[in-house]
Length: 100
Image (cartoon, rainbow, N blue to C red; front, side):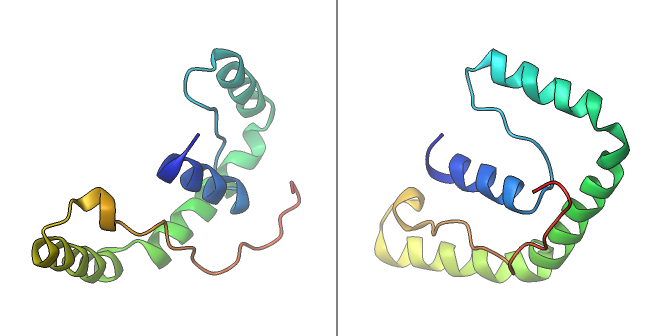
């Protein structure tokens, strides 16, 4: 994985909010699906952590100003979006979990 995909995978692992399988690796996907099947009792809490993170860091009131600033920068410089998109901003440090 590279770029934003790698950052999203890191965020997912660090906050224990899901599982990640690299693109084009069916064996890795099968492993993830097996882990999901084995850990069904942990899934509600994992989903709750993901929701809390999304609501705290990625709601409209936080994201809209970032998007507007990015668009202003793109339009003002003539550069492409890819050349000015910042890396994924890390929210607060993840809390320790029982799983890692």
